[in-house]
Amino acid sequence: MTAGCAKYKYLKLNFGDIDGIPRVLDAGQCNDSYSLALIALKLKEVFGLADVNELPIVYNIAWYEQKAVIVLLALLHLGVKNIHLEPTLPAFLSPNVAEVLVKNFGIGSIGSVADDIKNLIG
Image (cartoon, rainbow, N blue to C red; front, top):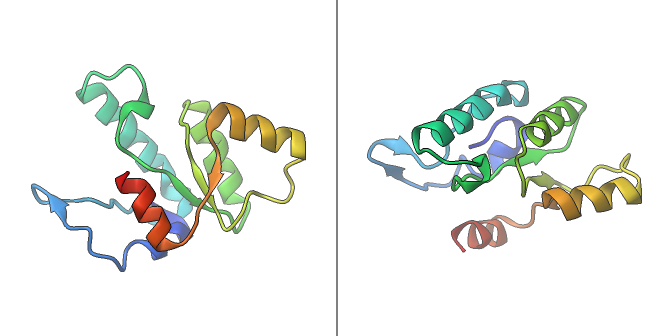
């Protein structure tokens, strides 16, 4: 699932579909990420999962403007872990706050397309 600037890294690639549903779902602009959060919460409910992190979903946030802060905070509030930020962790994060986010939420950065796909597939 993707929205905003991060999508341009993936939408040009053909990941195919699963029974007609694209493997990469695009919600539009980053301020449309609310739709992705609702989709993830509904999938969690439909599959009877206790935690949204049990879904095979990767969250990538392109860190280019203030809207990304709200998207990140909303995802953290929902308990989403292992969010990938690009091109690097935000410069305004103090080292202590960055350490807490990395340690407790698995926040990381996005790498090259080839490395990211390799990490997604496992």
